[in-house]
Amino acid sequence: MIEEIILTKEIAERFVADEDSVDLSEFTAIEDDAAESLSNHEGHLYLNGLTELSDSAAESLGKYLGGLLWLKGLTSLSDAAAESIRTCEGDLSIGLTRLSDAAAESLRKHMGKLSLDGLSELSDAAAGSFGKHGRGSLWLNGLTELSDTAVENLSKHVVGDPIGFDTTLYLDGLTELSETAAESLSKHKGDLSLDGLTKLSDSAAESLSKHQNGNLSLYRLTRLPDALAESLSKQEDLHVSGLTSLSDAAAESLSKHQGGSLTLSGLTSLSDAAVESLSKFEGSDEIDLSGLTSLSDAAAKSLSKFEGVYLELSGLTTLSEAAAESLSNLKADRLGLDGLTNLSDPAAESLSNFEGEVIYLLSLTTLSDAAAENLSKYRGTLELAGLSTLSDAAAEKLSKHEATLIMNLDNLPVSAAEILRDAGAEQCDV
Image (cartoon, rainbow, N blue to C red):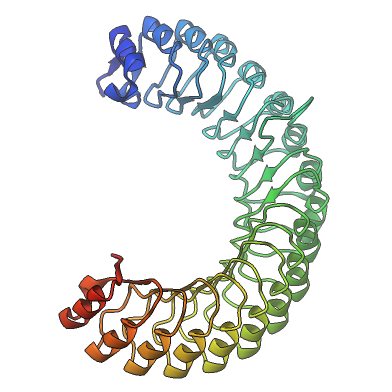
């Protein structure tokens, strides 16, 4: 039997006076008067070690006016305790695996973020209650199954005036979604996170594409139906990193995305036509294609037209001389080629003409003397922290680089490292 570690009033008062003096998460039980003392604390309360909470302690914690109240270790909570604790201000996170309908009705009145990620099941009635929770995000990521009725009820989440509150509904535990459920969720008036979905039928995707009142996050979806791609292109943020394939039509739609970045790191291949479309992406930040293992010369020429901040191609292990020449014309600020394990002399010469601020080449373990000389002419920051073999002649060439040079000097031969250290190369341990 595990011995209880009790949080007493004396310890609670010590914490309120100096929160760094006590780790509240270590305690598995709490005295009622200790909870009363903690209710006066103005910072966060992490009480994740507690497995139960008395009605009296819950009533005290309901007066808490701080930021975060975390009770992720609770295995039970009475209906009376739920009614009391929902009045606390700030974010509330409770780790219950089951919840009565009466407790759900009480907790939905909480004014702020409500996290119940421990729940493994939810009744239709409880879902109906949470559909009325309209003053903060609702986290139900532990649910792997929901009835269509429960989904319809939850889709009504966010009522009244949501100004100033995060309106996201998190259902990241769901791996499948029926067409009926998708139709219901499309009506949700706020951001919707369905990051657990790995597949989606065309009919369900068609329904979800009608979601127009917030961002839709589908991080693990492996295939993106064309109809949904068109809809996603219109939202502010786009999370589709799980895609393993992308049709030409879907790529054309995503290229119209106006957000800050487009992350497609799960793709291992793309047609030249799809790359041509994506190169037109007008977001101000990044295209992440770090899953691509090869890049045709035509695709490289297309990507050179991208004018954002960062083009991430760290999955490439080789780069043709023609592709290197094309990428040297890239208008982005940063070029990520961290997967390249070798670089030809002509390719190095081409990359030296890149006008952006940084080139990342962290997987190169060696450079020829000629390649070193070529790269030394680049006017931006060179990240070469993976080099472990370098001649003194190559080091001399690199030492002439006039901008920032970042390397792991400890991995280089002593003489080469000394030359570069004297030249002001920056040390970076990897």
